[in-house]
Image (spheres, rainbow, N blue to C red):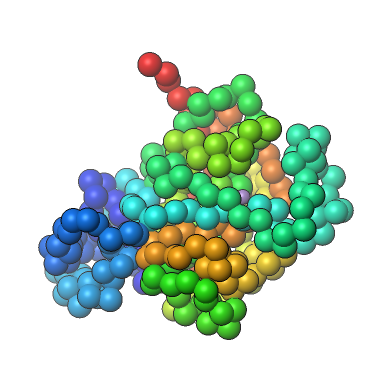
Amino acid sequence: MKICRFDDDRLGLVEGEEIVDVTAALDTLAPRWPAPMGDPLIAGWPALQGPVTEAAKGGRRVPVAGARLMSPLTTPSKIIGIARNRKNLEKESLNFELAKNARQDSDPIEMFIKAPSAMVGASEGVALRFPEGRNDPEVELTVIIGTRCTDVAYDDALDVVFGYTIGLDMTLRGKGSSSSRKSIDSFAPLGPWIVTADEIADPDNLSSSLAINGATVQDASTRDLAFDVRSLIAHASAWYTLHPGDAIMVGTPVGFQPVHDGDVMVASFEGIGAMTVAVRVHRRG
Ligand code: MN
């Protein structure tokens, strides 16, 4: 099942080239105070399945091509990023700016947090606040956690996955903390929709690509990652309780190319789809 948020906060199921509007199912999601941590759609999904199926029967259909795709996540408690999760790191001939960032600690998995306020959907695009710097899109499989969990064992890790989406871990290169450089507004495009976990047999064997203005700059696979999805969930949940809707961007293979004002990125993932994201410069004031 492919779940999207489109136009003015409509909930949709993507079927081929069409979106079926199932927004009516959301009537059963009652607001609560205080709101529990996490994304209410993901947390409430088990109870929503019946109403969604019902709503889909008579749901309005619109072409995907004409829809304004928003981030399928709305309020995750956190977006966890994984730094330098690549095989053969020592063989990389990265540019000086990247080499300066080379890890020197012995922690096998290095996490950082991206602010949820950095999320946007494909249709909203990326706005560069520091266009004079180097802004790199890192296309990454993004794991969506489905259930509140902590200390998850490696072998059980895929059981807590709700689904997968495409993430662009937008990164302003530089010396500042990665939480700052990766949390700029719009620096976490997610989408174009969430594919539920049952449709992805092996998240550690998915090909991906990134094109900028039609030129492919990255052609990769999650096989190229040093740590698999189970390892990342086990590790993250050893540090943090994970809540429904929490996202883990698993890291990107090599193939960095910066983007500039006016560029158009197309990020694709096997089993998920493709997300087109435009780049502009943020207008201050
Ligand atoms: Mn990254």
